[in-house]
Amino acid sequence: MKYILFLAAIVIIFLLAYIVSNNKKRIKVKPLVTMLVLQLVFAFLLLNTEVGFVIITAVSTLFDHLLSYAAEGINFVFGGMANEGAGPFFLNVLLPIVFISVLIGIAQHIRILPIIIRYLGIVLSKVNGLGKLESYNAVASAVFGQSEVFISVKKQLPYIPQHRLYTLCTSAMSTVSASILGAYMTMIDPKYVITALVLNLFGGFMIANVINPYEVSAEEDIIDIQEGEKQTFFEVLGEYIMDGFKVAIIVGAMLIGFVALISMINHIFEAIFGISFQMVLGYIFAPLAFIVGIPQVDMVEAGTIMATKLLSNEFVAMMDLAKISDSLSSRTVGIISVFLVSFANFSSIGIITGAVKGLNEAKGNQVAKFGLKLLYGATLVSLLTAAITSIML
Image (cartoon, rainbow, N blue to C red; front, side, top):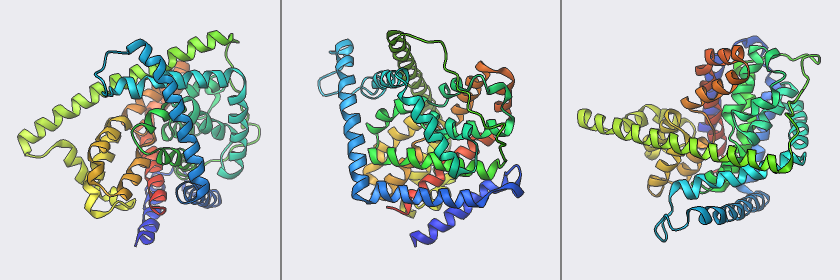
């Protein structure tokens, strides 16, 4: 049954992308088939083989160590603020982002990251049917995040046509930044974080290939990366420490606002209709949950989590998932977990638009015009990742 449902999910997801395609006649089938096969292979390796177990264990152990090192600095500054055994979300989940950000800054400064990102992007461009710039941007988004990545292509931004800009933004919204991976791993199983990270990379290319197909000439396909002003090692440390802290503060502030707002709306709905707003959304999203392989008994609860992520952000949804995970099947938890690992939500439209507008106002206005279509595509990427995962569980 799950194989039939998987095939149905693939057909429906691509049909939903096809319906809004800019140029249906230019859709290239070969790259789609190639990347779908690659997604299945990587999902199988990561979730069902000894090799995948070793990889995930190694990455998970690495982040465990990094988070323990981060805890040393956090305890030095904030030690004694929490009760013994307590685990404040801001201290244990968000503040470690500062340390991970520092490590990314160091890898960037010593020229390791630029080499990896550039050449991995070139390799990906051979299979995805898109340009080198799009491939570079997708990998860079997974390292730097959805707003910071556009700084690296600042010089090219004024000359990027709207159709290519859509693909760049889709990659940025479909992935997550490396600095936040450790935070996710404290909330959901690390194997689902890593699996989603890999599958979303290909999924972004696939959905963009359907919604926004185009050809890139060799003359257009030049990666001209903005290096920025040369900084000393300690200037880099200071900059990335502050960047990491800003991310932690912004995520914390958004959580305060969204959790409080959802609580208020739920209270109003329960007082008037006798049912929470999130539960109403759960029924609306239940068909999507069922399509990607969620068992029927869990599909309303799963739909609620999916809707919460779309309307607020992945952190709020992950916290809600943690509250009810014991009442859900392991299959449901796995599928929903990979769905949550992306930046596909309404607030990301503003984040990406603001980031691009800060670098080039005209291009920022273009992003604002296709903002809803951008979210639509990124959400289809998350659904595709969830469907691929479902066949392996």
